[in-house]
Amino acid sequence: MSLQWLALTSPTTTMSSRRHFLHTVLGTSAAAAFAADSKLTAKGENIQFGLVTYMWASDWDLPTLIKNCEAAQVLGVELRIDHAHKVSTALTAAERAAVRKQFEDSPVDLLSMGTNFEFHSPKEDELKKNIDGAKQYIKLCHDLGASGVKVKPNALPKEVPVEKTLAQIGKALAELGDYALGFGQEIRLEVHGKETCELPNIKTIMDAADRDNVRVCWNSNDDDLKGAGLAANFAMVKDRLGHTVHIRGVNQSAYPLDQLAKLLVEADYEGTVCLEAHKLPAGDRVAALAEQRELFMNLVTEARKGVRE
Image (cartoon, rainbow, N blue to C red; front, side, top):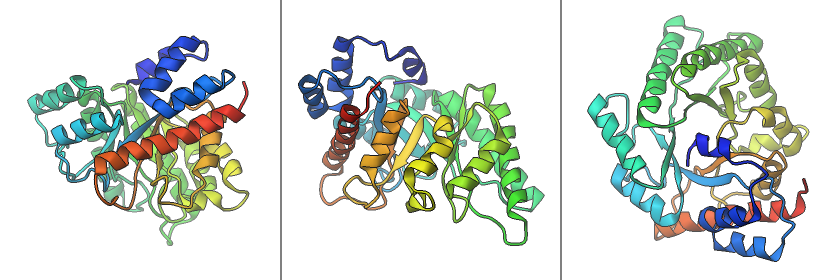
């Protein structure tokens, strides 16, 4: 499913199509919940579940990845670079077309490339190297039919005033956002890094970036609970969320994912919540992936029962 599809889906969707959406995307239990509660809010109906290929899919080649995601009904993926899928800027034009066709011939949507480009270095050559690298991946995502590139803030150099570094990161993101416009791409700033992951710092970076297509990739960090708490920290960036959100394993973490699901529903979030688990499951990974989808989408359904228009 694409961003174009999301743009065409509105809260005025008929009850019939909502039931179809729940059945095909959210799963059987969510469809049953809808039938049991006709007052289920339309908010959150466009939340989908996907996968970041870190850990759980790092050793799957591309055909295996697509096959396994389809089997688990996890229909959106963010590809981490340097994994067994071997999708990188080294691909030729013909190879890029072949990768794109594999996704187009399947129900699985390529959401993004998950890169490690960072923009905090006080060394100009290092900063330029990261900006130029991210631009190459913007072009790659365009060629592959994806909709965005994930980047990250990663550190605050001790020898540089914090405000200067945050402004520098924002300026780099603005440059990438301007470049990405020509390729129809979203720049997704993962909430990441020691200190930089704190939401007041993310907000400062985003204020400096000030581009509509530079967005926040919520990352479900323990730091989200600091200060005034999850809801207050979420509120700092909820209007700037991109089309991907990261979570850990639903039953592998103490993070309050039920609260996050409620916040996403209240914000009427439209995008894909992607599993980026840090621990491999025991046994069948495809079955475990399907279970993760069911567990999280059940949280979304419960949230939609309690949130009104």
